[in-house]
Image (cartoon, rainbow over all chains, first blue to last red; front, side, top):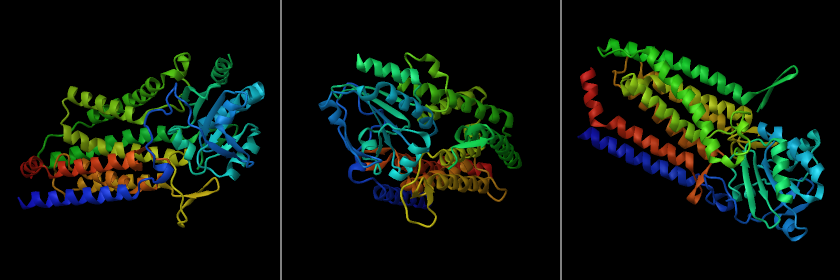
Length: 181
Length: 259
């Protein structure tokens, strides 16, 4: 009986201390918003708007592409340490050269510094806009958990498709062509 | 971080390489652990545990987990594959669902164990080190590949990640795995009475408790309502369940008969 009470006390104490620690280590502010464990945003819904800076300090707002043009947008979430992202980035560069202003290709980095991103872009000859998301606001806004994640947004700002994992050049170009039709 | 190991003109991705080595070491650990557990049981007058069956169970779970993790990912993201079926089987360097893989591996292991009539708790005791070795490999693969990185820090033990100082949370996780292996080793030592399930539960408590602690320093953790880290909540639930099982009176009765 005494053993049972001791165990009960120990388990209760562990539950209290553990819950307290979880509460203390929770994310607060914008980063603390619930993140769906499924892919977000949902296909068919309006893409959440955002403004970020490129590595050169130029401000880029998603809704500007819908207002001016309008132009379909491809968002590619990536990081320099992500090997699959490195594999597909030349495809985005090629698509940027091929489609020019017809499609906006935006690379949204995950939590790295502008300096690190700029150095990577120089080293690999990337010229399409690479946006800095140091505090992960837009990564959290789009519920990005896996890298790379690519989101196709049509001229009306509606999410057409969310693809997770490495894209081949053929798939990327096919999806862009579909948005341009 | 070392995402690629460059050997002359060849670049080997470090993450998958560590996974392969980790899987091999995990199977080796299961074999060694099964022999140790079986030896201790025989010395205590309990039936032996067949190491070959324990090894086969681990191999079955590992293969089922690999295939299951891939299939689960493909199902969840079918739009990425419906017009590119070759993409389901190649490339395999990305696109796995860890939770799905773990569930399918557990189901495959459970049914294999039932088929071979393996006793549940001694089998779990033998499997625990292999599972821990695999989890340590996952953490090391994340460290080399750069995934699952830590939060910002000014502490002297922080590591430089592309110009930013961060907690080496993947190494903290690996250290937790090593501590849990120590707990398993202690629970199977000759000085501790043989209680089926106790080594597994000690290792589970050490690992879940450690992950509860260190996951606070992970930057890109999956979050739930209120900004709580999903891994921490799951770790606490597992920790409490393992403690409750350890305290379960039926298990202590089993302990008394074992002495």
